[in-house]
Length: 130
Length: 66
Image: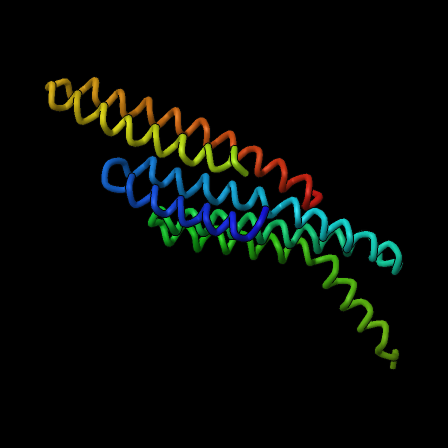
């Protein structure tokens, strides 16, 4: 999808939101939600293309599959956490959005544990035994 | 893209019509029926949105290799 179309969609959604906010607040919130879904849907196909390219390059450079998968999963978690945090913030639940962001950070750290372990083991391997 | 914008208009239309029905029923003095109309409109919109959300999460799952 074109960037122009996404922008027009956003403007349209905000107009409809302002229109509906007075008469029906809950449906106005669902309009925000569906706008985010539609825009993300159009982005995710492009993301898929980029990821296929990254994976092909990684295969050519003989990068271990575990590392690439971990990185892609981390990016996915951050996108999902971002969506949830922004939605809850729009609904006026600032604390819940903070909790969602915290959960995203924790899960990312959890996924990165094997990589961190590998790095620390490599560093320990450099240190000569006394 | 056109279909996507259509969903937006659909939801906005449902919202406006439900608000209209609510106002008319309230003027007629039938508060309970007005509440039910609002509830059913909300459920209809929620159905559309939840379907879209589930599609999005499936797509994210397949793209980010979960």
